[in-house]
Image 1 (cartoon, rainbow, N blue to C red):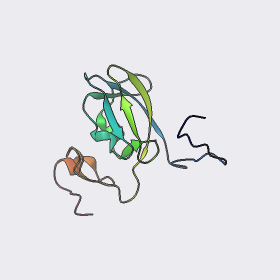
Image 2: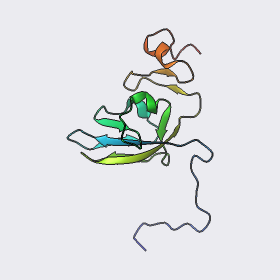
Image 3: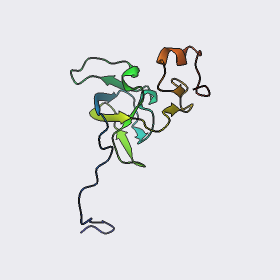
Length: 126
């Protein structure tokens, strides 16, 4: 046993049960590691993370609209420089309203993405 380690006696804990999972390939093309928290809107992550499909076809950031990392709440994923990662994403839950963050997709996620970006809809009006 490792000092501080906790061993659970019981069934495995399942997270995000029943939510659809989207798989993307992500590469950090920057010169520093990037860390993303569990509930950060993945479409707005650092622009040094480039997205591609499982077939290595480049993807737009809109492929991650409304999604977050499929990891336990309160944890984060670190993306090292010049490395590829296959990641799993699940839909954001709750009211599905993204706060300011980087300001690229701020507002409700259940409306038209282009309407939010051109300012005809806002997060305050639902």
